[in-house]
Image (cartoon, rainbow, N blue to C red; front, top):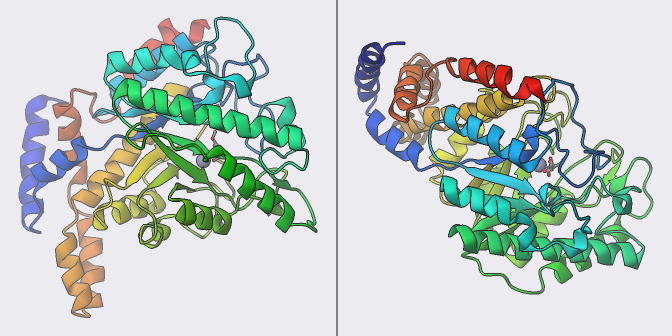
Length: 420
Ligand code: RNT
Ligand code: ZN
C-alpha cells in the first residue's frame, strides 16, 4: 500500500476516534512503550540445544513438521531477528535453560552458569533488547517419571532445586548485563495421570523446594522470580501439584510474580478476569498469552475475544507497568517465523484496540447504570477503523503493512530455512 493512502487512512481514523474523545497519536505513543517477551521456543518446537532429541515429556507437545526449524543458537537468533524486523516496536526474547551454549561440552542442568548464555546476552546487547528466562524441568531423564521439584526422592528433588537456583543466578546476570530486569519463570510438569490419593504430600515438598530455591535474594533490578500455575497437562489430567491456588498463595506470601498462562485453566475460564484480582495482592505478574483450542493446545495467538479481553484488562486497569506480557505458543505446522509474527502482531493489535477505547466514557455509562448505552457503544467501537491506525503504526515503525511481511518470510524461507 502507498504511503499517502496509509496517511490518508490514518487521518480519517484519527477524526473518527476523536468523535469518541480518543487521541490516536497518544494511543500509538503508548503502544511504542510496550515490550512483549517473545518466546524462543516457537522457533524450534521447544527443542533446545542440549540433545538431538528435542522436546520430550513434560506434558507439552509441539505438533506439525513444517520444514526448516532452527537447529543451532545462531540459526535461532537469525530467525528471531527476521521476526523482529516484521514486528513493530522493540521487544524482548524469552529463553529456556535448554537453549544453552556450551561449545559442544555436555553440562548438567544443575551446573549451569551465566557463561552458557553469554552468546545470548551479547546478541541481545547488540539488538538493544532485554531477555527473560525459564528453568527447564522437562526433556530430561530426571523428569521422566513426571516429578521434579515435588519428587519423593531427595536426590532428584535436590538436582532440580540446584537447577532452579542456578537459573535465578543466570537471570540475574542477564538482567545486569542488559540493564533490564530478567523475569525468571518456574514451570514444572509435576502431577498425576489418574486417581490421586496424596494431593498434600507433593505440595508440601514443592513448597519446601521453592523456599530453598528462593532462599538467597537476587537483585530485583536484575531478576524477578515468577511461578506458573496449571490445572492439567498431558499425563497429569487428574492432579497438578502446582495448581492456581498453590502458586497464588505462594506468590502472595513470598512476593513473587504469578504467571498466568491462558491455556492453564478450565476451557471457559479466562485469565483476563484474573488480572484485576491478583494485582490487588501482588506487585507484578507475568502472562503467558496463548490460545488453547479445546485444551491447552498452544495455538498461535490471534485476535480472538479472549485476547482482546486480556489486553483490555491490562489497559483499563492501567497495569502496563505491572504486567509482563509473555507469549507461549508453539505450532510446528506453519512457518515458525510467521507464527512469531502473527502471534506478536496480534498481541500488539489487541493492545492498540484497547488503547483506542474511550474507557472513561464507558466507565461513566456503567456507573450511571446506563447498561444499554454501554453495550451499544462497545459494539459501535468495533466499527471504527482501528486497522488504519495499526497500518499507520507499522508504517511509522518501518515494518511491512498488512500481510506484506509474508513476502519477507517467503524470501527468507527460499534462501535460508528451506535449505536446512
Ligand atoms: C507448559 C507451560 C510452560 C511451557 C514453556 C515452554 O504448560 O505453559 O510455560 O509452555 O515453559
Ligand atoms: Zn506457559
